[in-house]
Amino acid sequence: MGRTASASAPAGPTLAVVAREAGVSVPTASKVVNGREDVAPETRRRVTEALDRLGYVRRPRFDAAKAPRLVDLVVHSLDSSWSGAVLHGVEQAAHDAGLDVVVSAGLARSRSGRPERGWLDKLTARGSTGVLFNLAELTEPQYAWLAQHRIPFVMIDPAHEPPPGVVSVGAANWQGGVTATEHLLSLGHERIAVIAGHRRTMCSSARIAGYRSALASAGVRHRPEYVRHAGFDEAVARGRMRELLDLPEPPTAVVVCSDRMALGVYDAMAERGLRIPDDISVVGFDDLPEARWASPPLTTVRQPISEMAATALRLLVRMMAGDRPESTRTELSTRLVERSSTARLRG
Image 1 (tube, rainbow, N blue to C red):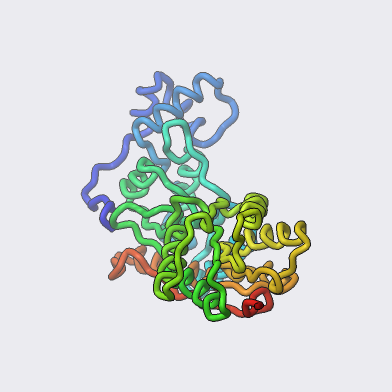
Image 2: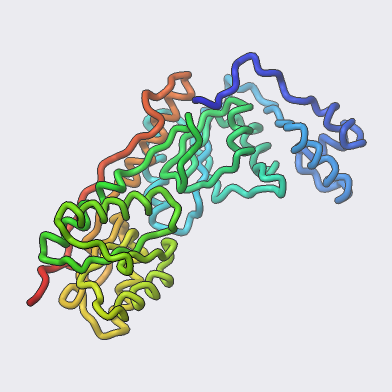
C-alpha cells in the first residue's frame, strides 16, 4: 500500500515517555492504558492527551505466535440488512481462511480526529492482524495511524474516494445505473426520474452518471428537475417522491438508488392513491430482502454485497501475507432482478 510505513520505522514511545509527558508516574499511566477506574478524571485526561499526542500504541502481552489469527470488521451499524449481508460474506470467507473476526459497530473519533484510544488499544492488544472497514469514513490521522503501525486494511464500498494506495472493493455502480434506466426505456418510459443517495458519495455519483448516460444513448432529454437526493433515508425519499409527483409533468418511472429509499417511494405513491406499476414504474438498487417483501415485489439492481465482503477479506488475507493487490480498486458486477414493480408505459 502506498501509505505503508517501512519495516525500519522507529518504534513508538514507551509508557515511561508518556508518563513523563503527562507528569504522572508510570503505574498511573499504565492504569489509564488498561482502562482502570481508579484514576482521577483530570489525570486521565492528561494521560489520554499524551497518548494521542505521542502516538503511543499498547503492545500485546501475549505470545502472538500462539494467539488466534484475528481480523477486525468495522461496520456502520448492525441494524440493517446490508450489514447482515456483509457479515455473512466476511464470516464465510474468514472460516475458509482459518481466521476469527471481531465486529465493531462504528468507529468513534476523539476531538483530535484520531480513532478513540479504546478501540485502538483493543485492536493492538488482542493482536488483530488486519481490518475491514464497511461504509466507514476515515480521517487523515486515522489513515496515518494504520500506516504507521503497518496494519493492512481494506475498505468495503467506501463512501468517498480513498487516498491513493488504499485498497477497496465495491460494485459496478455506473453500470447499475445504466442497466436500471435501460430497463425502463425498454418499457417505453422516457420521463424517468432518479432519487439518489448523498450528493458527494461515490456510489450516488456513479449511479446518476449511468442514468444520464443511458438517457443520452437513447436520445432522451435529461431533465434536471428529475434528479433528487435523499441521503439513503427512507423518509426523505418519500418527500422527494412527493416533489416529483407535484411537478407539472411528473415522471412515469423512477430509478431509486437503494431499496430502503424505494420503500419511501412506495409510501408516497400510496398516499396519493397511485399504484405501482400501473401509474409509475419503480426500480430499486441493492436487492436486499426488503425488495422481495415489498408489495408489489421490487424490481431492483442487485449488487453482490456478501461477495464484495468476501472478496475484501480475501484481499486482506493476501495483504497480511505481504502481497500487494494488482489493483487498489476491485468492482464486482451488478445485474437487474426483474419483479413486479415495473411495467410497459400505458397509452
